[in-house]
Amino acid sequence: MLLLGIGLCWWRLPIEHEQVRVHLRGFPDADRFMHGLRPHILAVVFFLPFIASLLYWRAGILARWLTREYLQALLVCYGGILLIYFLIDFSGNATRLGEGDSLGTSTWLYYSRLAPSIVNLLLPFGVLFAAMYCVVRVSRSREIIAALQSGRSMWRVMMPLYVCGLLASLFYLGCNYQWAPMAEGMKSANFDEARGKSGKLMGNTVFYYAKGRRMWMVTEIPRDYDKGMPLKGVEVTTLHKDGSLASRLYAKEASWEESERQWKFVGVELTDHHKNEAPVFVSPPEPYIKKTWKETPAQIVKVGLDVRHLGVPDLTSMRRSDMSEAGMEGDYSRYTTQWHYRFSLPMTCLVYVMLAVPMSLFVTRRAHGGSMAMTIIFAIHLVLFTSVALALGESGNLSPYVAAWLPIGFFALLGSWLMQRRVTGRALWPLFG
Image (cartoon, rainbow, N blue to C red; front, side, top):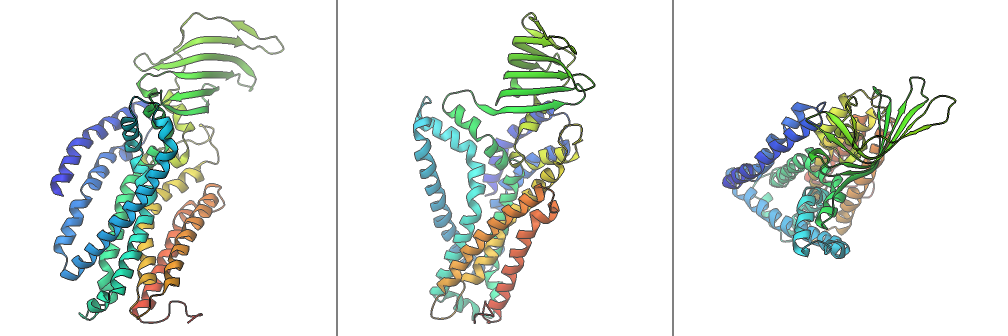
């Protein structure tokens, strides 16, 4: 595991350092410290298997036994969920992926880039079903009774499952810092590139540059805009100080030349507007150059990205930016809620384990299937309450911190309470016996 972590770091960290450098060049107002943490967090994620193996090596014989049981269950449950998801998604996309040079190459290119998003999407449910399967298995075989007869408490015997849930949450947290949200945001562009077409990052984007009083409307932004690829279908409206229309520029393509710090437009139609006068149509020479416009494609892209597809560094930058200048009044709650949600969402893995263990554990002759069904209901309600709380937080009707952490905290307390009742031998549901 140590050699595996070193090999992954040797392969991936130089690429991540280069991507951070390119990103900071295109987004000069980005949070340099948070983006600088990306390679270090990626290194921690790569070394998590080594850390887990160290914990296993230091554990006792009972902890190793339960860990092996859980890993077998995780391999079956999580592997099965991933396989089902891949088959369903691939069956719907196989025809269009076949438009590329090779179906196998296109499929690998698309799903390898989407992997962080897929892993994070299904990991909590894999952890939940694996915990349920493992606990029911050792309970039915009476191995849990033998473990309790060793003199250890039920908390102590089940501790390896909580540690596995915590490690899964740390892995989820590392992926959710930057790579999983961005992979979901780049899904459409990756799909186009896998089909052999030019990847479109986003379309129909509106950006207002307050200092120059210019409104940008871009039909299509390519994925490689930061490498010189032109924006397509550009309309730039300039306003007077009183808010009246000054000029309007239409262009088929617009590219930003980083070295010259200037815009170059191709296929231009320009109109000048004067108060109480008819517009004047101008045919400027091609290419049409604008050296005084200081806005960059990165600023247009940042506003156009969905807040759900921004990582922690970008959300931090947006929280610290001047919302009024960027024309984004009222969006502070949205960015702050999603920022806290990036840290609370990974805790779902641990909370699912805290719910699954007491609900699936039994020491009597007959298993309680209803309790296991209630575990799934709890998981569904956690997703539902989280969605409602996020909507309230993003709209400003609830504190962003409370909106992100309240559902997780409530169900974590519920899992602890259920486990305490299970340990003391009392009924899980006092009102129903």
